[in-house]
Structures are given as structure tokens and as C-alpha cells.
Image (tube, rainbow, N blue to C red; front, side, top):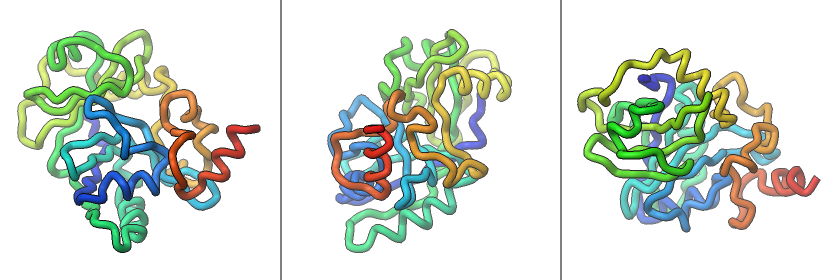
Length: 212
């Protein structure tokens, strides 16, 4: 299924991972090469401004996939905190085609379905394995723009969205900004919060919510 509702933020520079480590709920400094992660960007009150699926695309580059309707606002806000960090944030949506893969379509691209948040670089692009939904393995494919669509029958966007609901992983969209702390969307159970990392905006609220 084409995932036209998603966009991509590119974070480049030798401090890219360090910068994100201090802004998001996830540890991007110690992220293994073959892994992606779910993460959230919070206000000082611990309310979610955006959620991302992120991974290292190189030694000094991190890609963040988020809902397109929050991308411009969160890109502007994150950029305000760069200050002296050697990191540059840009909207890279036009550089990629994003696809949702389910069932046998994953095998055609990646060989097999792996555990959630595992990442593979394939000839067609980067595959991030997601939580299963409606009894089917699921994955995100990020292709360079202009490549042929992945093999397999087309999946109606509505069916992909139903699988998203069934997976139990909610990506934040514009109507939900400022409504939830991460635990309200179950992020502590689906790998969206790292409780061992250093400080980030809203961390005290998240830690207090988890303690309760």
C-alpha cells in the first residue's frame, strides 16, 4: 500500500544522533545498525508533538518517518533546538517513496519477516519490520524516489490502516497533538520509550507516569 500520509525528516551532521538523543524518547546514540526505533517528541509537559520511526542511514545521518500533517511544524520546532550542534534537519519527503508491506509481499522484498523494529537494507530500499496486525506480518519500505513499486498485489489503504489499528502501534497525527503522554498510546509497551537514556523534554512527566 502506498503510504502517502507519511513524510521523512533527514537529520545530517556529526552530532545528528547526539542531538536526537537529547530531544526524543528513544536512544539514537546506541541504536544498532540493523535496528530502527519508535520514538516520540514531547512538549515540556510530556505531551506528544509527533511520533517517528527512525534509523541510521549512514554514519552521520538519521531518517525519521512521521505523519506528513505534523512534519512541517515539528521540523520547525526541532530545528529551534539545534543551536551549536552540528546537525541539520530538512524535509526529505520528496526523496523517498514509502510503502506498507503485508503478508507475502515482505518475502518478495526482504526474504522473511523479522522481529518488530528490525531493519534491512535491500536492493529496493530500507525495510523496517513492524508489529504484526490482523494476523499478518507487516513492514515499512522506504525506497529512493523513482524506483518501481514493490512486487505483489496492491493493498487498499483502508486495509493497511486496519492493520495499523490491529498492531496496537499508533502514529501521532495532527488532531492528536498535545493530547497524550506516551503511556496513553502504549508506547512503553511497543518500544517507543527508553527509560535508561538521558534527559529530553518532558522526561520527568514520562518517568512519573511510568512509576504510577
